[in-house]
Amino acid sequence: MTDKQTNNQWWKSAAVYQIYPKSFCDSNGDGIGDIPGIISKLDYLKNLGIDVLWLSPVYKSPGFDGGYDISDYLNIDPAFGSMGDFRRLLEEVHSRGAKLIMDLVVNHSSNEHPWFIESCKSKDSPYRDYYIWRDGKNGGPPNNWTDFFSGASCWEYSETTGQYNLHLFSKRQPDLNWDNPALRREIYSMMRQWLDMGVDGFRMDVISYISKPEGLPDVREGQSVSGLCANGPHVHEYLREMRREVLDKYDCMTVGETAGVTVEEAKKYASLSGDELNMVFHFEANDLDGGENYKWNKNKIELPGLKQVYTKWQKELSGKAWNSLYLSNHDQPRSVSRLGSELEEYRERSQKLLATCAYLMQGTPFIYQGEELAMTSRRFASPDELRDIEGINAYKSLIKDGLSQSEAMEIVSLRGRDSARTPMQWSGEPGAGFTSGVPWLKINGNYAKINAAEQVARPDSVYNYYRRLIALRKSDPVFTDGEYVPIFEERGDVFAYLRVCGGKSIAVLGNYSAKQVSAVVSNISAEIMPRALIGNIKSSVYLTTGILQPYEAIVLEINA
Ligand code: ISL
Ligand code: CA
Figure (cartoon, rainbow, N blue to C red):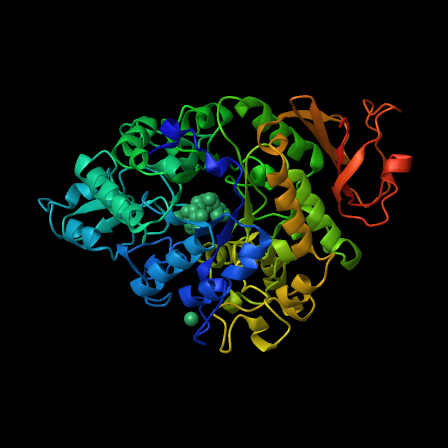
């Protein structure tokens, strides 16, 4: 039954945890995280209060883009384990009352997928139209598009048939042709097989790019390939079809990764009427420091811009569509390094602040592995330490632009994707409790200090704060249903809002600066004694003085 029929929108109050399997827990010492490793940590996640696990791809893949290049959608990559291991994981997750969603990467496949291999063989292959093939133009590629990872042409020439195929990402990730009904049927059938096995839904990789613009026109001055391909002419039609053909038949949860989505588009993708997806990830917050256009810089995200984005999405989607709430993921720098403070006195406190302010807005919270420990972005010293195709290419191009090795490595460490993909820090033991072997990507050197074993045992740790925060969110419908009302909107140091529902008001206050600030909520009158529901400072003086300490967050019930 669907959520439309049952009105059981369990995903609205759920807390989701993203696992990047390669870096989560290695059970057999080969340096690569695996499914048995995940199983061994389920109690850690259960204790945190997680309802849904999202696994980044574990399908068979040559691994040129961390598994986002899939060569077999129906099997598990041997590096992660077997199908038996996967079924056991699913059972163990379900037996703890939790759910599991898979990453669905269907804008493109790997160039090693049998469909693509067949597609290359001849123009008459039944798989030819599973991909996007075109003749060249004026002795070159069909248009002037460049790919997201190398900056070279999006078109790969094939000698065999004398045509080019399109790839928005690397050339090892040819784009699938969603305009072909046979391809769509194949994908729906594959999705049904996972759902029939018991999987509880999907996170859909760059799903906003699946419908390419009519005629594949050249990018003109001021346009981008991403802008041209996002939210294409048939994307909503295809998602509605997917909803009818697949999703409506299951009680599942879907979140679309929708690069280039605007609030207007999000209202269609994630409409509460339930025609397409349950929610989407937008990029407007993370793009504030450069984003899609050009992220290889040292720009900082400033609070005023961030508040504007948060508030716009909260207000615009209210009553119409559903928000996702995330601070970072496997493509973004660590949130504490980017938006909080790495200074030892403030690192834990600022991570707690970020979580409090982000996750008490309206929407479904997503926690990226290690955030609950305030893990930091790793700084890499030399290019041979990098593993990510995007970062490696960016390093080369920064060097070409004239930067020194250390300047280029600093930027790639700050903004590249490897920095947040380093192995989970489970303990202070060698290998950080992640592996007994050599990790596939260097562990952050601070694991002796920042690790799960230490934090689980310490009541005021980030981990235990996240546990209380998740429990608080679930304790009262005001956190799911309450209206979002921004306060102190004009301030550049404080992010604050009310959640209001049925005569109840909650105030969430966060000081994003390293200074003490005064922030008295005007509608707390003398007769109303506010009660602090959670806060990141034990000796807070806020209730008596209205003063917030550096990076303080406090949540008040103001008229109970
Ligand atoms: O990481 C990015 C830029 O630095 C993003 O633009 C990213 O490429 C975009 O968010 C799409 O991400 C997803 O699809 C990619 C994959 O590499 C990412 O890991 C995945 O999250 C291609 O499948
Ligand atoms: Ca392993």
